[in-house]
Image (cartoon, rainbow, N blue to C red):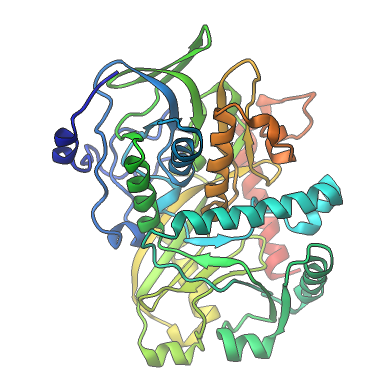
Length: 478
């Protein structure tokens, strides 16, 4: 194994990018997410400070007990828990710069969820007993997250989550969900009428009411990612950027990971690549995810008068009830951040119309901000599973390969818990995990496992276009 002195590591600092940011990258089209590419131009990266020191690219063949592929929230938290709770010092491989993908392109909203389904949908799919256990897993995940960020300066905005009804017709179902949360899950969700929301919380002109839930924290995604990075390295974790896995072979129970700088041999591998998971990374993941794009914009700082004109009295995280939902909040430095769905393909992502749609949405929600300057605009890929729930799983019991993927846009909080669960799998304690998200693999797009149809995969984007049109009709017209 490569040995590097402390002095060499300190002199090395953060590995500089060797290639520019690629705005048109598409995980369904590219064999790898690149090598050594620079960060996307996000608000988080611009205001997080200097990236932390790392261990440089892989520069020769090396042995590792455990390799984690991906240096985002999930990969780094898995490495932290492997060291803290199991005495295992992992080696983290990253294709580009540290936390280059989902972890520095999200909305920074930590909600009490794991995937895109509501509690009522959990009951329909899994039954009440499993749904109650999933809820406890989410609460435990929030506790894990709070504990992990307690000593990280990531600008936390606690207080809960405001789930805003964007149309009157949504309120009955929102009220029903709130009753279920209170009565069945003992979770103190409460309903607010439209007047209360607009007067006391925020003046979103679309708000027909809202459900407030007690758990929810806004964070600075870049500062959190860099904080995880520093914490992991303090525990002895090695982090190698500019080291994409370009070949993955298992022989005699040993995994051989081919990188541009050399082969890394590992006893066990944890995959935590999120929405930037390439189709060729590992056979267990081919066609198992539908990566979708999400756009975000951040305004200039609002004046106190502008904040008052919008009744933006809360810093809590906010989403609306659209299927193609918006997520938004007032940041600690008085900027408004808002995000929503974007293009279908990477090639289309840089088109200005997707930014313009979000700007239109800001004006629709907060008319007094008409014409406000936009200081940051970016987009990123979200890892959505085909059944809208994540998996932290060992896909083949004969191989020590594990993955934690499929959060569907709710990974800021649950990635910490998923990292902890991934560490359990790697440490040989996976048999203790008995929830559906741990005991089953990511499904294929057509759900019917008897078909396991890879043939349908190329048409997913066509289906996505059709679904987006249908969702738009349901959200705005029907």
